[in-house]
Image (cartoon, rainbow over all chains, first blue to last red; front, side, top):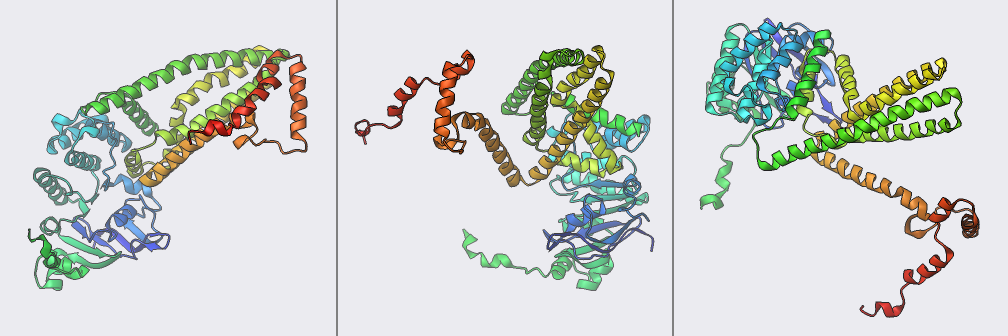
Length: 255
Length: 273
């Protein structure tokens, strides 16, 4: 299998706390991989290790056939990232943000102008492109960060919670864009809490729980193997061992 | 490489320019923005003449040193004082003004730019710090003055030392920025550090008073044998001495005698208790 992302025994530690406990990720090229897990499971820490924001304590990472720890610049040229905090300059406009990213990636000015205009139109940000990012709503910021990640035409895209805090319209725009990107040969690795979206969008899934990868594989096959074809939510709850019906104890809420 | 540096220069320029732009926010934020602009203008207004004055003094002093003028011997002491103040301000100001730029640090770390170049760009950006900018003319004027006085070797060493001082100041500002970023990642820790820093500055401001009064709670700072006798001798010397300036800072014995009863109030004065 041709892998865009491959980790072996990836393990970041913070003192005595092991955030991610030796996970082996396998993300095929051209796939839309959903990385799900409960709060504090280690999703964001994993994505930080994969994007070079955090050095793992041990283990190896291979992105597009390159080692990001040895060749960070070569890897970053081919990778787009929408991090958890979106990492935008508050005092820049969307156009200026895209221009800066394009300049750093060494794109010609004409290409930057053309791609920026297309991305801003696609994200419905053209009318707001002159406003400072500080004045944007959360959804607008998310779309700006996604546009900045897409501008250099990366081969692999990392998205940390792309659907969190965005409205239905923006969510639909992002989903359509990701599907189109994968159709053209790109690979997406995203984390999300919204299991319905992951189920409909992603063709591959990895489930992390307490820092350990408890399941990984094609969505349909994984669902059949774990729950006999039930929903992703049922599969997820079974894998992470969550108890259902906790609300039954809250009888004082009857009003 | 040049393209990268150009991109960073444009980024800094746009961030500075957009920082002055009005944003469509509430009145409180507008007041904050105007205050920031006003303070910036005040600092610029005071720094520009100060910088010119320092440069003139450095040039005249350098020339005086080269030609052997005795009055110019005060120059190194003055220069040390100015550089010490600038170093303290440069080290403190990034920590005090820090906040909210962690996201942009992440953005820079995600770009295909070598880490070394990012650090170099950060270091170079510190030269735009107004306090560092203010001392650059003086650091250049000193070797120019020495050169004008005919001391070529001295001018060379002064120039080299000036460049070294600039690098140290830039590195200090950069280190302070990094420290600020680390502290303010955790809001609670950042607030604690701010309070600690402000308290520290306040306490340092009391140091001259403590020194002049001999210590906290009125205790003498010097603990050598017979301090009171030594002090009374020096007081007498000051009063009788030739320097009217020194004498004016020392209270007369009669005044001290008058103050003593007020320090220990009589039981009658506490009658309201």
